[in-house]
Image (tube, rainbow, N blue to C red; front, top):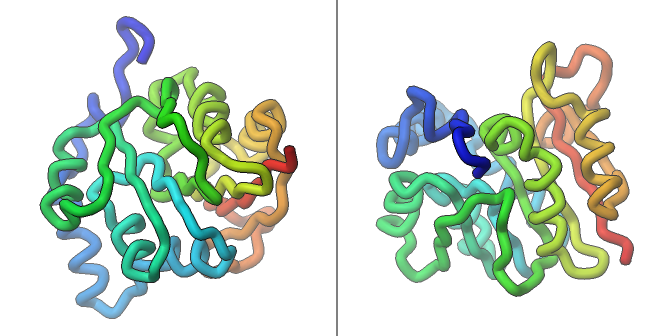
Length: 195
């Protein structure tokens, strides 16, 4: 993180750790599918997945239950503490995505839950480049984020992924693959590393 830059997640008044998890527990109890991200990732066919901005591990843990090799990385120690408490057998790494270097590659990297809106302002390109560097040839970067006035746009995101050597394969408005169009305020994008 750049000197003097306040990360919007760490500097914000947001729920963290077990308090964050309660939101998804409540949604699940009300009958909502809280595993749409994992379902889409599984359908894309990777064997190994890096959950970048993993938070409390909801997506990574569900992917592991489905038989995928996973690792999670996050900047927030409170979120990682909750992930470790739920799944101590999985690798949980505290790191800034803008400087990430795990020394290995994955079949897919997922940025779920508006991760790109919570990185330090001005580091979005660095984050995309660093997570893309963790993709093997043919690997997929899958990101979901809200967009609209004052937020990262899908067009700008495509510029960042192109600069990182990725090409767009799919874009949907939801994790269950509803079409993305002019009225959409959320984008789920799948980009592939060709070389």
